[in-house]
Structures are given as C-alpha cells and as structure tokens.
Image (cartoon, rainbow, N blue to C red; front, side):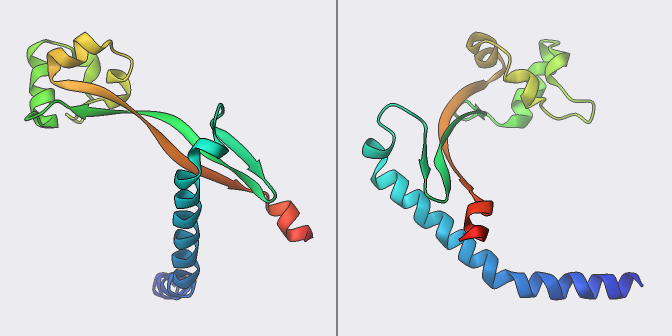
Length: 131
C-alpha cells in the first residue's frame, strides 16, 4: 500500500510540475512589474488592490552574522557569555529569541538585524472562479 501511495505521490508531483513552473514564472513577472512600478504603485503604502487580488511588500526582519562570523561562532559566544535563552536545546542559535534582543547585545555575540521588503501577492480566487 505504501508503495502505491508513493507511486501516486510521484505521479501527482510530475503532473503538477508544469503548473508549478508556470506559477513561479507568473510570480516572477508580478514581482518584476511591482519592482519596475514601485514608485507609482506604492508611493505611500505597502500594498495595492488589483482586479483579481492584492500585491505588495511586507517588512520582514532576519538575523545575519557580522562579517567573518559564522553561526557556529555566534553559538560559541552565546555559551561563553551564558546567554542561554539564545540557544536552543538542540545546540543551535535561537534566532526567534535573538530577534527580540537590542542591537548592542546582538553585536556582542556576532550577529546583526537586517530588515528587508519581501514581495507578496494574494489572489481573489472567488472572483476569478465567478468570472
């Protein structure tokens, strides 16, 4: 039975692949359009509503290591300074915890906070289905 399930999953994945490739291409086109027209589409807001959905940018925050610092070095520094709240039990950096720390403390252990705008879109599936 597991063999049949695996075969069906592989068949479904192969059948879906052209559609996934097309969706990725359309996503890239939407993002290129948004980047090219960013000043006119988003002069004072982060999203815009179009006929069949929304698109825009969301502010996300990610942690990056300082130059010439690896996450292993950050982990060693966290242990050395006894900042155990920043260390997961399975011995990796707890990035969610570090996101709550001030910049000075992040720099002390060899990390920094970096914000970026991440493109997104939302399709109005009901309206498309009705059309």
